[in-house]
Image (tube, rainbow, N blue to C red):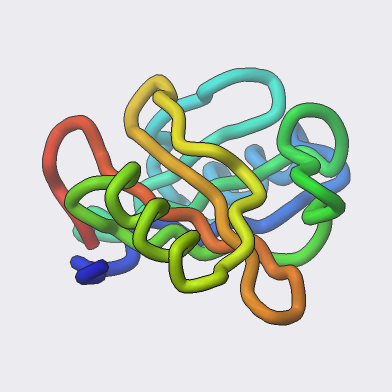
Length: 126
């Protein structure tokens, strides 16, 4: 696996509407995509790096990873990176799949923190 950069970082929030309003209207971040009621993304400055907000409950509470932060590491091929890491004994907690704007899979670090292997459909990274 060869990391290309950090595509996004994520905070879990208790009230996604209130938090989205704060990041957009108070901090001035630009809304990038409101994926569904449990996930919203903002562009950070003039970079392709995105801040995602994740609801504390529902589909985004992956194997107990419903608090804290998440990092999405850009890779060329999510399936290949997942297979390589699984072969090295890394715990895969979210199988590779297609999302609205990307392909992603989730692995766990030794403490169980969620790390996403991520590939944007538009080919950008970082």
